[in-house]
Amino acid sequence: MLPYVYRVTKYNPADRDQRGHYTGTEPSISDHGPVEAAYLQAIAAFAEEFGVDQLAIREPQIGGFAHFGLEPPVDGYGLADLFPAGLAGFHDGALVPIAAGLELVRAMLRDSGAWCRLEAEGAFAVHVGWDQYLFIGSNLPCEAALARARSLGLFPERLDASPYEFAPDDPLRVQRPADADFWARLHWAVSAHRATFLEETYAANASRWHRLTRDNIEAVRSQLTPRAQLAVWPDLLTDVDAAVASLPDEGLVEIIWEDKNGRITSTVVDETQFEAVTSQLASACAAGVVSLATDERHPLFTAVLPDSDGVLRARWQTEPTPSDRDWAFLKTLRRGQVVTGTVTTIASFGVTFVDIGGFTAMINIPELSWRPINHPSDVVSVGQEVTAEVLDVDMVRERVPLSLRAMQEDPWPQVAQRIGQVVIGPVTKIVPFGVFVRIEDREDGFQGLVHTSELDESSGDVVEVGDALTVKIIDVDIARRRIALSHVQALASTTENQPRD
Image 1: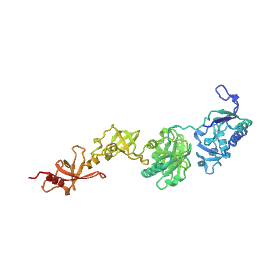
Image 2: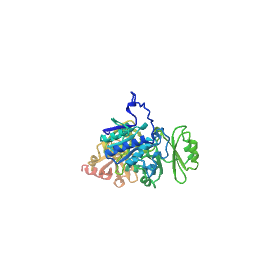
Image 3: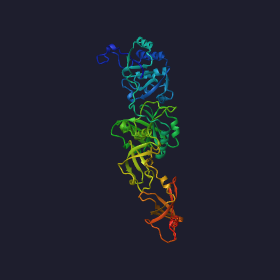
Image 4: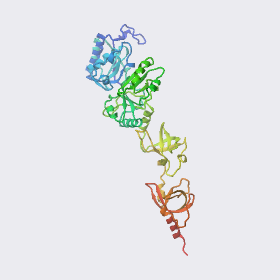
């Protein structure tokens, strides 16, 4: 917040009632003449005394809220000839010389439909408010500029702060930047959906639409307006009639359509204009309808473009989607972190899903226990609270695999110490290359393989599941979690240990 803020107006403070309302005769619209010129000269005086020669456009808006309705709308929103690149040049962070900044102020004083904050970050600011109210903030008192404003017939008054000082909707929310993770996720989304739509909002109420395929993502990316808000949407409907049928009974919507030449058009309309616009869709190849009501807009995910150095300086916030909220949570996780959650689902294909702070993570069967299990329900149950270790944080697919067994002591080193032991255990499985035998007296005991070459078949007996078999532990491969057993060597060891006559 700047220490010196002045409200500069054409309204004499003496002409105010006890509630502070102006009761004089000055009109609340621009005179397009000497008073307007006085405002601009006052701003120039402040800028000159402060020593600033250019200002940055912040939070630009066109149409909608920006047009106060006191004067007729102007073609080009009063921005004609100010930006060689057209309206796309009127974007957050764009630097303009003081002369161009004064023309922007003129457009705002005339209620032409364009609005923005003009600022030298943390040092100087010009805000234009309703009814010809001008607010100038500075790090310096600018006494000479104040005197100049008074000599021009204006009335500067000291304030604690500008009522148009930027204040984020949610100061605690971290806005998702369009960084490497974002573009990787966008590539993944395009691959999964074959195509998606990217909404590029370069000023409030002003956006462009791009149909993304795997072949054109980088080309579109290179042409985006600096600091634009981005929203990723599902592809348009090729059934145009179905898109038209999705129009609401009333309310503002944005209709987007693509013609046979790949040209994309969008327009904002209400129920009184639906019929006229839908007639234009007759030749469309695909179309879609997006509500302008915040609680009815459901993009896949959103972001804001950072500057070229990777720093996100744009101050506006997109409305967070479920994916955006997941992203914010995933940014707090790291590999090896221990988390606590509640088992929500045990899937038929063996994966256990766990709610950790509103995000659904997963545990694959091998990560439930060091010991062999047939089904996750052998270890966990729905509603159970579990503590697990984060194995990875996949920002692209938004997946977090967990490990329950990482929180348990690894029993395999103890198993390795049993090499050479002879044990008797049940046969649990018969395979073409041998049989598996459980070497521990417990249902989830470790099992080893007796290869056919290590089976004693001299007796002619057929081994069946459930038979007790004497085996010797001949090898334990901790890395591959495999135990090798021998029936032949177990019998030989038993014979050797028998007393001789």
